[in-house]
Image 1 (tube, one colour):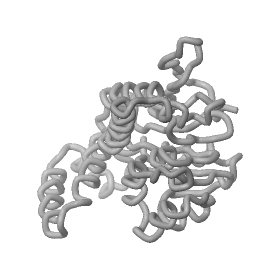
Image 2 (cartoon, helix red, strand yellow; image 1 turned 135 degrees about the vertical axis):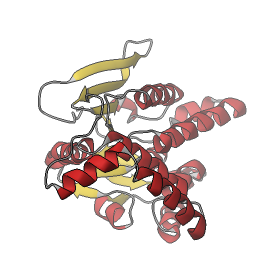
Image 3 (cartoon, one colour; image 1 turned 30 degrees about the horizontal axis):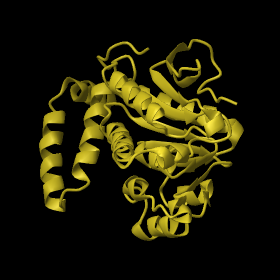
Length: 281
């Protein structure tokens, strides 16, 4: 099964790329300013093969420049969200090509954080290893109650070194270490409690929950959201004093923007703001 983001009509759909067998590995659907990227290799549980990673990077680069898009959603087709790296590919790769695979995957995760649009992970099933890393690298994550999460590399003698980078930046050190040391699956409720995801809903409510969240974001000023996301991640690793110094500089400039002037005026005048943003797709 392939989950769609909305049941409403009006999609602008595009198959991003096909394999030599004609299989569409990654698709993009755009509706009302929300671009949905679907990992579409269910027979491999949407594994992050070298080709899939390359397609994701290309899509993110394109979306970063697309001003008709306000929010990006990442989802998977079939029974799983994403199972992580393709172990068959890893086993047969040379040391250098394996290193390049992990480097390319890391760049995708960095690109998600640096992307000028908020990214929502929509998880309907298992997200393991680099698939869990993908969830942790998104800005927001909404999961069905049937979803589950793990960093199971330790079970096959391969510690999840790269997934731990994103996971340890979402959850506390002890929760991250428990996931990494045991390799055990945790359910969606536990994932929410430890901060890996935002919300848990029933599977049949997943589309609507993501739709409502995305709609809230698309209603905001595009430039304000872009500045805010960049500011959020840039201050995390600073000292407290450095973070406040940077935030003070950015906020003082932000208070002088046209978006701030309109937003404050709208609030004081008890009306909806009118953002001067490009039309959404």
